[in-house]
Image 1 (cartoon, rainbow, N blue to C red):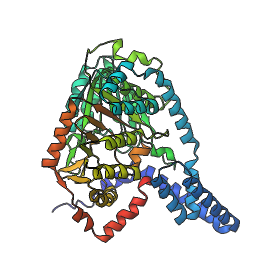
Image 2: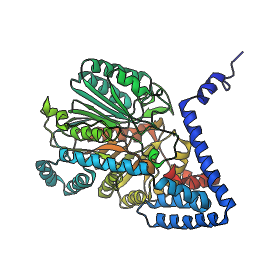
Image 3: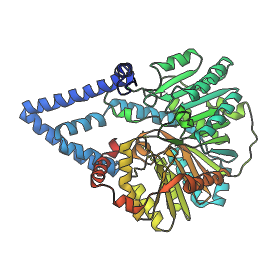
Length: 521
């Protein structure tokens, strides 16, 4: 008799007693208690009800006059007006938490501590000014407001797939002599992590300094409880960034979504690829998994090294006193000479600068011929929509590739609500028909490119710690363009205006409702 796969008691029991289920249950109980307490109190005392109504009005006025993104304002004002008592209480409770202020102040302090180590070479800026005043202005902004200088003498290798990056990672990890720094949003047990883990443990025994930082939410259901303790016992200095706990706090929104690997200070990786088997297509999820990454060799890797330290030192009390000891010049010189320009950078949710989005818009606004984009989540805010539509209306060939098979159905529904307007203004939307595209790439005019972790949605642009590498005039830009052209011709289908206009009305209504709350999802 064929076994009924729909009912497997062991799996159900394991799920019920899993760490993830327990944490979510505690979180929901906490929210339910808060709602019950506030509503009951207001119901018993009339003056309390009117007090909360007054608080609601104050909260709405505060939100309207704040410097937040308009979409974020609307996403908060709606629940406050729909649930006047609890909505206002929830906003105040989440907005004015000491944990958020503490982490924000600590982040600012750590970044200030690293500024003396991130100085801009005048000779690089002079060379850049001679090639492009526009890119020089962008570099000025990124240096002053982002905190990261631009470099020459850096070779960049582009990887079209996670498998390619993984093979290069293994090769370079085996060469490590002094230190390995790894920072990832997701680490999941499987072939990819087992291979890397074995190298890290072996290198630690050989005296190589190993530091590993992973996000508490991204790995919450993938790794065993207190897995960091196990790794430390193996000689791998491991920390968990912002461990997920069953407390209603805004700080839980600020995840470490970055992907950084630094080896001996001279070789670095970044891009969209996490440490899990689906990223290298050894495990199928949502069809073929398309992801990209870059490997840097040379002077620009120093930015990645300092990015790692900035978040490493927020997590725990341990300090790293001598940053200069981690410069490649301390122990090895590669002798790389390259006159192109590379700017690795990080974007923090704890400051007032949205450097990732502004860099993206700079590329869009200054494009002359084309802008090609890949993103798994297309939920642009008003500013990004304006930039994309204006570029297309100005005659720039704007193309965006999104997944053909989504990983989150509701994100796809929200994204589809933007297709019709974008296409009507001349933007071309493509779906990756082979499966799920997780790559976050920008390419413009055969001269500029960005490969990193930054999606085109509110969470990535405003709430997460992100990173990327901006490249100008690099040889690898031709490889990135070849990858785009291959996708357009062989791996994607173009979305038409007619199919957007013919979407069922119920689907369009659900998209519209979900879109209102997109900044809070």
